[in-house]
Image (cartoon, rainbow, N blue to C red; front, side, top):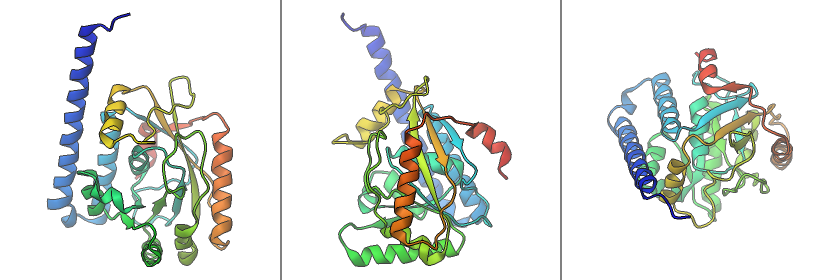
Length: 274
């Protein structure tokens, strides 16, 4: 069966429109971080970050649902948790920030991404140069310092992305920051599901796919999936970092074996947050 040329043209126009809308949103975010962000109070900065993340999810028409109670908020007096999660897509970062802004530990290559990299640098992301031990120690101690200041941190200890059908072993290096700061570690399961509440690999940023290709794929599939964040019970930071990593990994793997059962949406959640 031949493709309908009219539908093809509409599809191209749709992709072009939302791609341009995304670029505009990123430029607005960059402008805010360059000219306004530094003049804002801490609570205002967090509100801006949350607005930016929520708006980006809306551009892709991605629904956000949460399970559990130990999620980040945009209060300045919150408990400083270290959130550890499986990693599927660059969208994961904005899904977490749409609930409550956190500071991320990320690989140094991301700092070179167009627009997104500069935004990450401006909003306090800690970048790690792989293979350099002194760099790892520096980031671990900086993360511990921020946790002691009450800033929640998030890390993806797999060190890479997957399709979300399985979870790779966790590296424990950055979990040591929670041990140093005696900050509770909260495992977070990230899942992308379709309208039938079934796992979908569509949003996965894997293999040799470029960032632009992934963005166009997300635009092409607007409104066809939901990101589900499951916040599990905190793990005591008095344990050894290797034990914490194994316990968090086990918790997330067990969660992935279950059918997602979202109990709240971001829209409902906003009513419960200050």
